[in-house]
Length: 479
Image 1 (tube, rainbow, N blue to C red):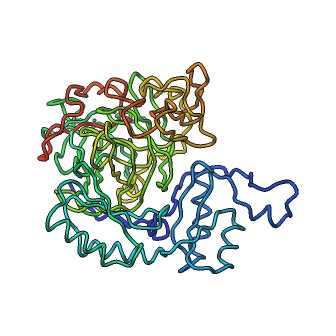
Image 2 (tube, rainbow, N blue to C red; image 1 turned 45 degrees about the horizontal axis):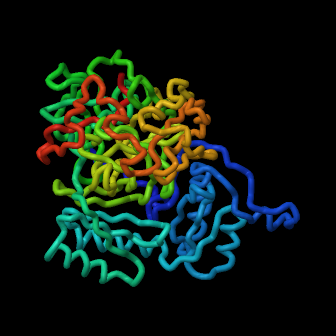
Image 3 (cartoon, rainbow, N blue to C red; image 1 turned 45 degrees about the vertical axis):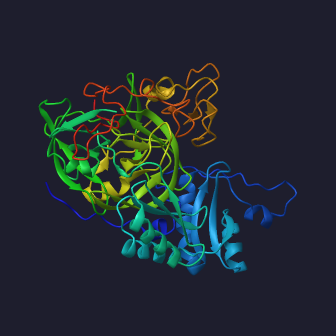
């Protein structure tokens, strides 16, 4: 098994939590302009667009704004790209508006936030802490779990205080940051239980899958059942360090490895491509411990200081997870693979922060492709597949061109807007999940994905010991 330093993400997308969806999508041309506005005013009005189109627009804009650029995010409710602009340079503001984005005045530039993050890394790399840029507040959000106290807390607080005013803030987490050891399709190795993330084709054309790096360093061979015959061998793994990622190849080159996520009860959702995460992006996570859950991306290029070591370059979300969901798939309504479950704090009763390895970075590091590398198509089996798994009722919130996260009261967010009033989902590849990270109205252990042929439902929300025993599979595409 080899260990490889993974490539750094594009600076413009990672520097300040900028939108970064790579999947192709159609720009919705509607602008918030009345019929009697002049042509120039209509062209400069904010455009409604998909997260993917927002990313494409940002790639054009970000490099042109220079020191005036303060990050960006996707407003999923309004379907708009919001670009943070430092200073009062009217030319820059006009440039952003003409491009169809919303110009928002902020204090901190992307460079300022990046420099502050470097200071934190040098002075406050303390187990139980994490930080990521939140472009919506134009700050670095530093999170300390319940283990950070005494001298550790004083050191963290003094480091944050040493930064310029308004650059960073501290928040406390009730839980403890740790890899979610124990969780779709389960895989077993060396006494540990992990999750199969996404099936891939390696650079040699062989079938394989991605999973969490802390799983890849725990055992070299993995099986579908505890103490079963190995089905795959770890080729490369990284943890801790520049990510939490592992590549496993199937021992039988004729293994059928469909590009899909198992939602339980015979339902799947097709995975058509890999895509970058974006702050504000609505996402879904699958795990055998907690089933199907949804939420949104809250930070990019996150640094997490686990007890085992520091991991950088992660996606931060508010999607709940519990021990056993490690390695599971994070994906979107359009069948885009986003991340692999790494770790976090809290659970699906109280919520918490969770972190994911970006799939795009893992694919680049391993030279692999999602599925067979083709564009793929929709899967009718996925229609409404998570509706019964997540316990969504007929009042599911319909998304308009994207996932509507809901707030936990609507009974569930319809990923492709396909659920009809009687609960019969007509979505092509859509899934429904609970409206938030909380357990109520969402996919509980009995309402989510079954543990599968290798899943141990009785492990459930039970914590695994940190030595790596009892690690669950979060989801899987392998049948």
